[in-house]
Image (cartoon, rainbow, N blue to C red; front, side):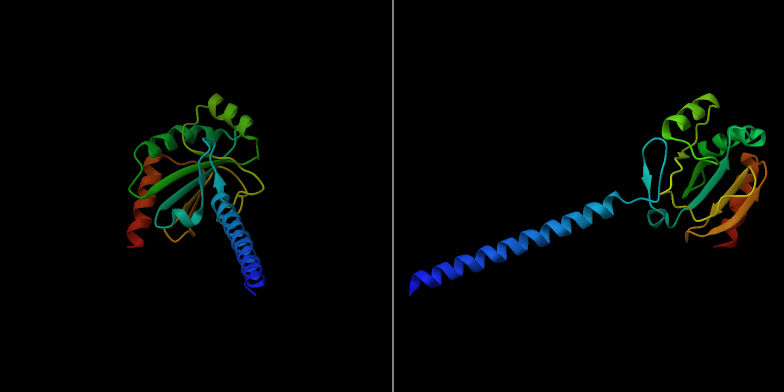
Length: 170
């Protein structure tokens, strides 16, 4: 009588361990999938989720190499980026989708030193592509676009506009 009970117990233990193994594999897959998800990636390989940027002010500038005002404002954006206000990040994104290698060549050619988003079908931004350039979007700490600046800007103008917005949201 003890032999059948032992076989039954071993079978139940094997079934339990197999079920546990399947559950662990499914959870590991889910966590890996979640970890690999991102809303956008920059040319330097860093990935970002908008959820992870909550609480910060984000400035996104659309540009293109065929847009003379865009190229004129790049040094101004670099100045702004070198002394970012607290809890603020700046990103640029090319208006026309390019591969990472094309984008790297372009940023080198035009001496673009600010973080550049690699546009892909998976890129998620809280704004639509602007109708013309240059265009700069300011996203508040809640992740929503709160200001759009159409046209060329300076570092001083951008800093002043951000300070005004931050003051209005306190």
